[in-house]
Length: 509
Image 1 (spheres, rainbow, N blue to C red):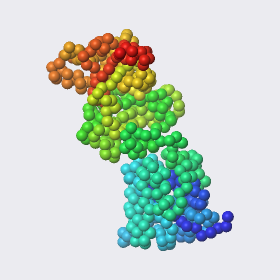
Image 2: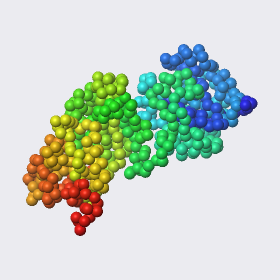
Image 3: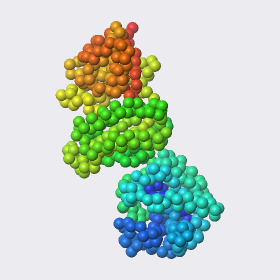
Image 4: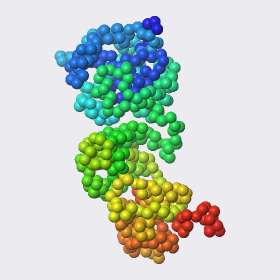
């Protein structure tokens, strides 16, 4: 194809701002050439910043900024457009006048010609990612430089298109369509997908900067996106490891013990009026469970609290929210069962959601008795609040098949233990009864209710309770952080858990 004058689209950003994803997106267009940070060698030469790849780059790539601008960025090309990714403005500080100036030798055309995009990202999201590559500093992050770029472009009458990285992650198609419209170029659907792995357009430094997390597409799944129970949770931010990330990026390594064997401990927390209910009690159980499973390199209690509070604040979740707090044994150096392979330390996950109580606490719920028996402490102690929940999930499947909210689980001797997700209570002739916590989890909400029963001078019994006692009870309710206190409106299924719906209807008639 004959070379022609080309229209340049400059994309300015700080590091770790999804600039590579945006570059890959534009690279999928059939009318676009792409340059990956063509001025980066000039930046390294002038600033003297130390990088492991510095000498290799300076020996192989042109570092004269003037030549790069005139011959590479604005040189002739074979396509209509050229996308030029630039990581912050190359400036220096004059030692005598403290006046910020452009890197010597760069022509004014860099700002005056072409169209401009300013890609921004919350600094709190940039810092943890940047720190995985090199220690961050205000100068290297270039955040102030982006303000300078914006101001100068506006003075030149070249106001840039502003793109928020959060919007790009949460709704890539809408964001890219809007960006193309602002740039006055047609949107192409190919911008939404590409093959994973290194690209020919990558700079020599890419293997250092892009080995933290790779993405193959801005659209993650070919399946239609399902509706969420609470639509606002589409935009939630979660804590994973040591950083806060958007929902779609909230992932752990395939080598993490939680993936390899469900090897983790967890807590469910609720937020009311700006406070986490019974936080200290939940953290006590979390750390006790981790200790019982012999976890090593556990984050401190204060570190866990800070992760919780920072995540809630970033999401603005100060009421009517639920947190799934998880601590895994961490990543392994190789796949396998042995905890000896876990040499990276634990992985902390804080997953907040807008979540009202999950049961109908006004009208009550129906329960069915599961054939799946609760784990015996001879095999796995229920007081360890672990993530290996298959025992509970099998019972929940039975509840789902019976079209009930949950399923009651019995112990090995046929006494009631709990439901698949909650503790359970009954009232009979003014006495409040609940099963011993031999097979069931001694829940935090359960303990709170028991304290209130005693405080109200009611009779409380904690003992073995048969299934028939629940059927003949005056009242039955369940307790748990996720559902709070939930009345059981019907236990008729307890009499015939294996009957068909028709048989149940005949019985009721």
